[in-house]
Image 1 (cartoon, rainbow, N blue to C red):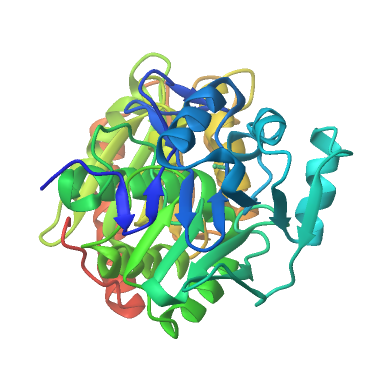
Image 2 (cartoon, rainbow, N blue to C red):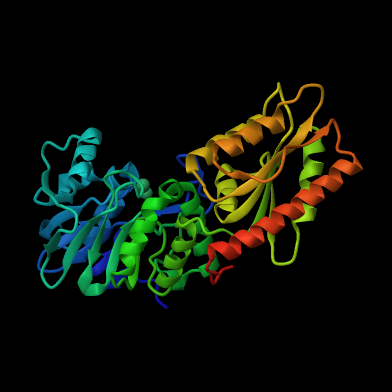
Length: 407
Ligand code: FEO
């Protein structure tokens, strides 16, 4: 299989691979990222999205290698977030004849970020089609997936969807297509991306996925990561699971500890949760990024959440995790709080309140250990882990989680 940048005859990837980025506004990008832009050549020529400003020179060189820049009639802006739009000012300098194609909300956001006074806009409505020649681009608004102005662009003649952030992954690779990369790696990166970027807008994603189900889509070209041409059905299935909050039979034990007591409780809960058919993860917040914590909870039915007590409250790492998870709005989860205390209570109780505030079903009272968990406490922890395993099995069965090829 070649490492071609050609999606279809006349349609090419012209973006930038950022091998070095490790922090994407707080998201840990261990495998780097790409900023995807595309060139569609027909009787009229269109560019789909730009790249982050520092890399716009690469975009312009990629375009010039494929076409005469003077022939480019349109530059589509599917999404105004700066990782895709901050290349516009430099690009429009070299494409003064081109029209910026976007919806009205996007035009307004672009004007907030950039001096757009000299740009010519073609404002499109939801469902509008722009004919380029043999091919056409149809624009579909996807508000709050994941900004208000977000939209996708669809080439019906090629059954090709330029899906913007949806179905993206933060991964750098010399090869542009799913079947040229490890499926396990890209599905995992898609899961991380969904958990940390798309999850708060899951309800809107459900609607978008349903709409797509009625549209023949053979190739999905997102704004980050590889292009889905062989496994488009698999990533759509994964999005149905994640966006409809269908959990796996999975228990996640998340905790931080001060002198090891909450850690011992976590290990006992983990032991109790390790039941046939149940996946169990134990996550130390002291040693794990929030990006990973969110990813593990995305498809986990049940969560034990532990904190030692510090100044009558949660440990700072636990508070940060609670704050992050509250923003991501994971629903359809069960769990309970646990942790240790000395003379003053507060850590596990604060976690309990946070779980309830997130509207998770709390399945038992707070599980606490004074100073150090004794054997009776550890036995209770194992029992509580078993309870979470039972709940996780039942929830996965009821939700109809669709197993993925990478499970
Ligand atoms: Fe990749 Fe929402 O920007």
